[in-house]
Length: 271
Image 1: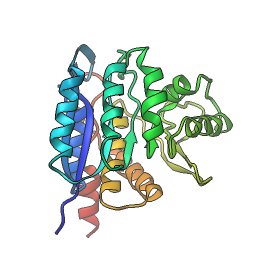
Image 2: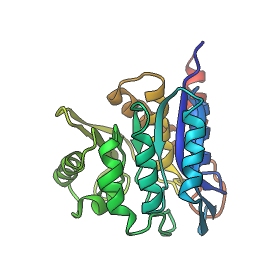
Image 3: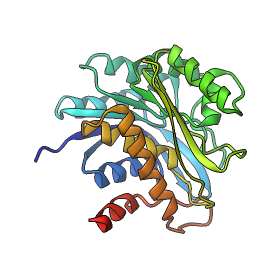
Image 4: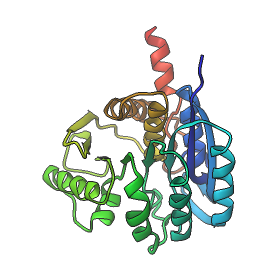
């Protein structure tokens, strides 16, 4: 049996629900060996982010090189990158290696409202990293920042996706979890080849949604590493995060973490 390797370049979440911790849990649940480069350490729990301690860009690059020089990484994701300096360094290093499927989760704001991306880093993200993306997975507020437009309707979601593809991304998934005008959770996919579709799952009323974006992007990355097509990876990642939300853990006093083992447990129960 060949074990595939994935890498996450993201921040650490001391509460364990998002960031590097969520990514590695997701990789493990999906049978992919997880490697990592930590961009920042956060003091964080379900109530919010108390502090952020960024890693020097050289330290991020050293971690990435250590992984890429030794492992045959089949897919990579970025999460919290924090600064323009880190984004520039990550993009430059990735260009030095043979192309790897790259999932960009443009993490900007934590659930509690704490900024996880410096303002000047947004342009670096748009100009340097997004053109390398196999797929970018913003939620609606992140897509609004990246496209400089208000997004409320299906038509505006489609237009925003077109704008993100024009920035150089091969494909985009705009996650609809922030909409309040629909009864279902609708994620919209579009790519440079003109393919588009919407993945819809029932809306779950819960406060346990911490790390949903990280977990979805990590699942997508794991499926790409396993050789799934991009559309199939998106569809399967949607099922992974839906199971994680539906089977919440009721941990902590704020926005609790999702259940990273629910998808695998449900699959085993069907056997």
